[in-house]
Image (cartoon, rainbow over the protein chains, first blue to last red):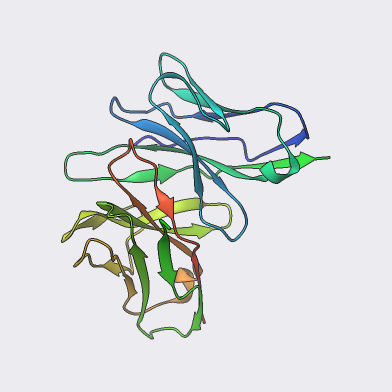
Length: 112
Length: 113
């Protein structure tokens, strides 16, 4: 199973774009890349998911290069409420299994 | 409202006293998982289930049991809890495999003394 590596923490200011990169060198062919957001004392919340190239939704973009060994979550114009821990997850449905591995997460702190 | 419900939300207990944390989802999801979260270690999968009566080990299954007798319920059982199982536990469910997002409960904070 592919393990992930993310920066432990990042700081930003309100209104800036934030890019968080996740490394997953051993990603398998059928693995999807999913990002979650977690606030203190709450369960993680789905942000975005992709397999290759670029995916965009109303809250974020996800960039995945052709080799898929990394991915970058892009949060446009962050606000104070975006202060949270962001997890990159690589997982797949294997024959007979569904193991998932979360990284240690990136703690984003947005300052005024 | 679509949700994953865990009970209890908080529990303080003693070593060796069997306990069960319940998890129920109302979205008719096939897949369910249990995770534990510890400072600096992120979320680690304990067990998962792909359907009724189909369960398998995640990364840290030692000391835990699960069952999936009904699609909506996936209880986590600690037969003989120990202090190293003090943690924040999350249950999650999803409609499909890795191409579907997981929906998480609000967590259960267990303290084993």
